[in-house]
Amino acid sequence: MEAKTLTGEEALALGALKAGVRFVTGYPGTPSKGVFKALQEFAASSDANEIHFHWATNEKVALELAIGATLAGIPSLVCVKSVGANVMLDALMTVNLTGVPAPLVIALGDDPSAWVSQNEQDSRWLALMSELPLFEPTQVESAPELMYFAFQISASLHLPVIVRFTRSFALAQGLVSETRLMPVTFDASSPLPSIASGGNAISLHSALQEKMRRLEQLVNASQFNQVEGNSLFAILAVGNCAFKVRETLDLLSERNQRVDATLIELTTVNPLPRRWLIDNLSGKSVVLVVEEGAPVVELLVKALAKEAMLPAVIRGKLTGELPTVGELTLRQIGKAVRNFASISPDSTDSLSDQQRPQGFSLKFCDGCPYPPLLDALKRTAKQMGIELVVAADPGCAIVAIGEPYRLVQIKHSMGGSVNFVAALSKFENLSNRRYIALVGDSDFFHSAFNGIVNAVWLKAPVGLIILDNGGSAFTGGQPHPGSGFNASGEFVQPVQIERLLNALDIPTQIVSSHDSENLTEATRWLLDYGDRIRALILREPCPFVPVWTSEGLKPQKTDGKIVGE
Image 1 (cartoon, rainbow, N blue to C red):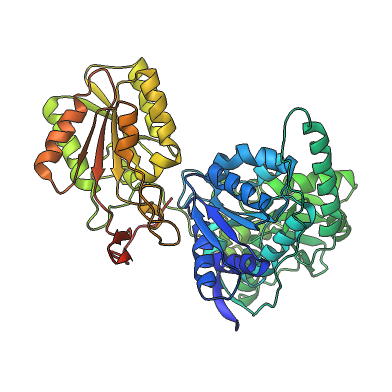
Image 2 (cartoon, rainbow, N blue to C red; image 1 turned 135 degrees about the vertical axis):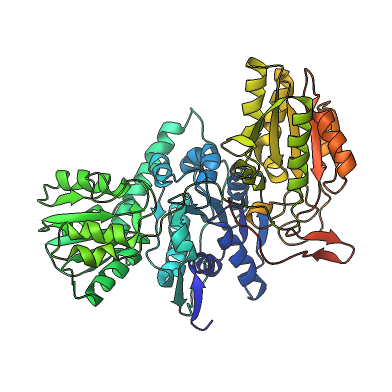
């Protein structure tokens, strides 16, 4: 491959391809879905070994599938976003002990400022808790080699390795040169047994910690951690913040405000290269830690500096130089640097300061099947003289939070809407209220079905609306078990949602958003659910989700799509 411009997600995908990945799974979310998509495109145009692609029903399922694949000797990659990492944590906290016979890497996309998420969590805490390796790419150009390195470490230590990146890195672009890397070799013999239980947890935990100590010795000499300059003032930039710090310093230099600083770029976050850091922080007077998310590295470096009796003062988010919420901007970094360098306020105040706008301003796409249903729901509720209490799962339904609907009052996590209104209806159950759960079809298979089963068991009187548009529309139309096709575009017999509801003895109707007369009747029927659960399936394809036809998988529309959670 000649040098070409790639995004951060594409660069990571290229590294996985070169490493010899053969199974790619996950659950669609932003960021991280781009790694999955790029790998599909690279695989289609390369002569690499055949790669199997599969969008799982949720992140826990994805990680467990990948673990199973490694037991068959298949190098695997799991693509998840920050909030999805929470879902897979159950499996993560045992596979760290059992290990994996073949390489397993987790491409984990975090979202500072919650640009396309319900929170801005820092998933690095999960790596610390699970005691697993975590690396952060500093630039697009070296991302393929870092991903390749992650597969190498996984192969040598038989541990899952996390590669954490942020939305800004996913969208960044860089010129990536041709890389002649051969597939990572590994020994996958005798993979069984793979058991973590009380009978062996302590010995496995001890072995895990020994693996991490071995890795620390390796990352102390890692090429991915770099130092530039020899000033008493040091900037410790973690992951993609290295790019932001460089850009900030370059812009200041162009304004004749040169900053005399040692730039320390850190990629290997867990374990920290403690000896390398001690060597490069010795003699420094001030160290400004710049990182996206929580002050994870800042806390660890503070402890390391105290342990090593370094004279350096460690500054950053904990000490107020940098904000503890939101994605870091160039202006914020510049102002933090200004505390330790002789530069004018004017030179930093004009730096970029793009902030995530607050408020709910998403709009439905042209041809969306949801508005007719929401209009009918509000109209019918008004005619019946009842108040709606509506919970929604992440997805297109969250557009109804804002104007002109202002319909959704509860929105938290995937599959949660049913559980929220089930408890509300059970314990509040006001006669003038109707408790409604808006569940997307992908949400249904992700985890809402468990809540629906529980609502039946709880005898909760709720109205359940399944918004079945044929795929994960909000994230780009990825398929689910009810779509009728898989991640490779092959036909798969769809799982019918109504058959699952019927098995639970839930009265169910199916209606199209284009059938205005029956839509009104169906919403009235739903709102008259009485003392038990009822379900209404709105079945209408999203114009931006591909459909299966007699001629195979065909796109409907290809432009103008909202891309979100």
